[in-house]
Structures are given as structure tokens and as C-alpha cells.
Length: 108
Length: 123
Image 1 (spheres, chains in turn blue, brown):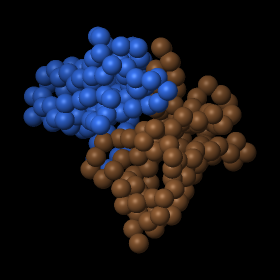
Image 2 (cartoon, chains in turn yellow, cyan):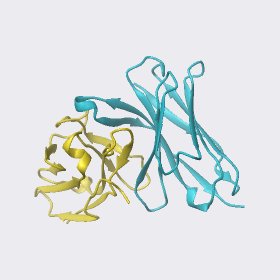
Image 3 (cartoon, chains in turn orange, red):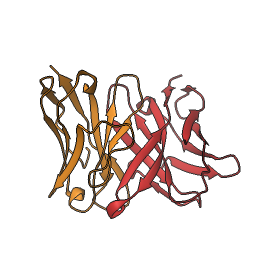
Image 4 (cartoon, helix red, strand yellow):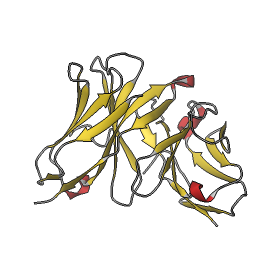
């Protein structure tokens, strides 16, 4: 079992806002990073640190954190945002990495 | 910019050792400031962190795989490698390599990733 918990599936209407969450005790001490993965492709970093976007990631993607929960928000979801999203951080020991189980985002 | 490419056999027999190499181009693996990591993804499943290595050789492994995993680095070839021993069908997965940054609060992020390579364990 993963130390980071994500909802398996979330849906959003085109153009609306969606929040994908990641819960875990280690998130009280560390930030999560977020990855988008489309079928047959390698994951792509979309958010890291407090709320940082790599070059080329649209500004509709944002991150936040509160307590033991990290969130990835997509404001104005587009059809091309339909993908699996994974969070990552350190585990509760701080010595190892861990991924959440992933959230499948459907854009309706 | 930095690019990573995995290479190695696509088919490994049960009980044997899986060996993969990640070649780093566009930057030096020994420039410091980053770790290098292996991650895998079982078919249709989520991502699983395998381990990190620093260019100096310091390693951190997933506790669930630690007894079978070795990650090493060859700075002269700008490569790092994964060995996973005593494989079974449960080790069939796409294996990715990635560069790891540690930033605010020493929190990690992985960027970039290699394209991934499918390794099937079967006789």
C-alpha cells in the first residue's frame, strides 16, 4: 500500500475547475510533486515545490498544500488534460521516495 | 537540455538478474546537485519508486525491493544502472530513469524522465 493516497478517478466538465488531492502524513513535512501521464507516454512533471510550474506547463495548473493534503488544481480544464496524475514525495521516514496510487482524470 | 535513455534486455528469465542502464546526455551526471532515480510501472498500474543514487555513489532504496536492488553509477560513461536480482513475473514492468531534484523543504521532484523500457520476465 502507498503512503500517499489519491482518489482513483475524478471527472470534470470541459472548462471547469478540478482539484486532485494527495494525502499522507509525510506531506506535513514535505511538498508533493505532481506528474501527468498520458497513455503510452512517460510521466511529465507539472508542479513541484510550494507551487512551481516547469517551463511549458500551462498556468491553469497550480499546486497547494494544507496539513497532510497536497492538491493539484486545474482551472479551466481542457480536453488535453485528460490523463493519469500522480503525486510524489518522501515517505514518513524521510529517507525514501513514494508515489501516490494515481488519479485518472476524465474531461467530459 | 538533459535527456535520459534507458537500455537493456526486454526479456529476462525468472530467477535471473534484470540489468538496465540509463545514459544521460546534455549534461554531466557528476555535476552535482541532483540525484538519479529508477522508477517502474507494472502494466496498467501506478508508479513505484525503486531508488536514488548520487554521483558519489550514495544510494537510497525502496524498502520493499532493497534486498534485490543495486543501483550504481559510472561517471566516466555518464550512466547509471539498475540491477534487480531473482526476478519473477511480478517484476514485469516499464522501467523509467529520471533525474531527481531536491528543493524547498528538501522535497523531491523528477525531471526529466527517460521514455521507459518494458522488461518482461518470462521463460
